[in-house]
Length: 604
Image 1 (cartoon, rainbow, N blue to C red):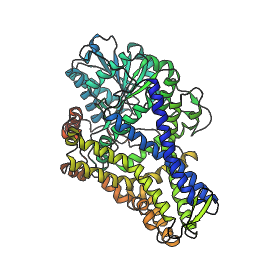
Image 2 (image 1 turned 180 degrees about the vertical axis):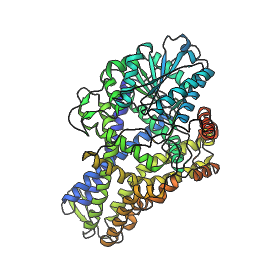
Image 3 (image 1 turned 120 degrees about the vertical axis):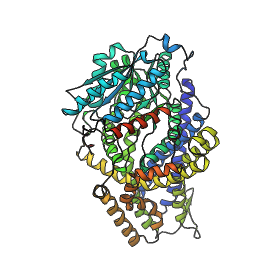
C-alpha cells in the first residue's frame, strides 16, 4: 500500500465515522430541541455524540478488516521477503527471544519456553536464536527455583538459554528489557519479546526476522496473538471471541495504520538498535496518577519510535502467535485495574511534542477504553432523566426551522431508533465475522462447524450483553479511585485455573448487585413502563455473583468443549504448539515437579 492510498483510506475512514455520528446526533437533536435544550438534554446530546463516535470507530474498523482479511494487503506497508527457504540462513542477523518474568508459575513458564526451543530445533534454526529468561522475581526460593529449572532445561535442548535475575527491579518490565539491551543487546540485531504465558512458533519467528531484514526502516512488527490454553467458561469465551472477531479488528487496524501501528508489549519483534536510540522512557512531571514512572510502556515506546521516523507495523495474517487469557471475571478485572492506571497516565502524552498523529490516536483510544465507562454510566443516568422529562412533552418534530405537531407519533420512536442504531453498530461486526467464517470451509470446520459456530456467536453475544455493564461499573470505579490518587500495585498475575470462594465473589460483586437493585427500584418508581429499556443494562450486575461463579467453572467449560461450543482451532488440534504446552503442563501438574515453590497471589 502506497503512502497516497493510505492517506485516502484514512480520510474515508474519518469521513465515515463523522457521517455516522452526525446522522445520529442530528436525529436526536430534532427531538430534544422542541422547547429549547435544557442543561441535562445538552449533556445527553454531547454524551451520545461522543459515545456514538467511539462505537462507530469500532464498526468501521471491523468493516475495513473484513475487506483486508479477505483479500486486502497482507502486511499493509511492509515489503514481503522472497526466497523463503534460504534467506534466514544467509542473514547475518541474530535474534534474542526474551521472557521477562516476575514470580510466575514455574511449570507453565518452562513448558512454554521448552516448546519454543523444541520448535526452533525441529525447524533447523536453533543456531539463529538465543533465549533469555529475564527474571524480576523476588524472595529467596523463587529465583533459585527458576535458575534450577533453567539448568534442567538446558540439558534438554540445543538452543542457548540464559537466565538472569535482577536485584534492582526499577522500571518494572520496561526496565527489565532496557537492562538486557544495555548489557547484551549489542550482540543481537533483533529481539522478540514474549510474556510468561506467550508462545510463538518457529515459522512465525523466522518470518518475523525475514520481514525485518526486508524492511530496514521497520523498528517493530507486532503480531496479533490468539488466546489459547484455558478451560474455564470465561476463558473459553475470551478464546472464542479472539479467534472469531480478532482477525477482523486486527486486519482493519493494520490496513488503516500502515507503518504507524502500535505495540502491545509482547509477541512482537523489535530492532534493538532503534529501540536503544529512541525508547529511553522519561519520568513524567508531577505526582501520580499522571506523573512519575511510566507504567504502560508499550504505547509510549511505539510513539517514540514513530517520532524518530521508524516504522511500527502490524502483521495480522501472520499466525503462530499465542497467549493465555485470564481464567475468571475477577482476574480479568484485576488486570484491567492495572491497565486502567497505566492508560490514564497517557492522557498528558496525547499532547506531547512531535508525536505523530497516529501515535496520539493510539494514546487517546487507550485512555478512552476506560474513560468511556464512566461516560456510559453518566449517559444512562441522564437518559433516565431525559425520559422522565420527555414524558410530559407534546410529540413535535422540526422540519428546517419550523416545529410541526405530529400528534399520532410518540417521541419514543426517536429513542427506539437511537437504541437500534447503537445495537447495529455493536452487533454488525459479530454478524459479519460469523458470515465470513461460515463461508470459509477451513475456518468453519476449525470452529466446530456452522451450527456450533453460530450457537457460539449467539451465546457469546448474550454473555457480552451481561458482562458489559459489570465492566462499566468496575471501570468507572477504577477511574474515579485512580483520579483520587488510590493507586494499585503492578505485580504478577494469576494465570492458572482456580476455584473462587463464594465469599470472594460476594466481596467483589455485591456492590454491582446493590447498585442494580437500587436502580431498578428507582426506575420502577419514577419512570414506570421504562423497565424494559433498562433491563439489558441491569440484568448483568444483578446476576454478577452467580455469573462470575459459572464463568470460573472448569467443569462446565470442558463440557461445553465436548459439545463443540466455543471451540477454537487450537482445541481441534490445528495449533500443535499450543497443544504441546497444554499437555506438558498437565504432565508437570500430575508429577508435582514444582509443587514446593509457592507462587504469590495476584496483586488486586
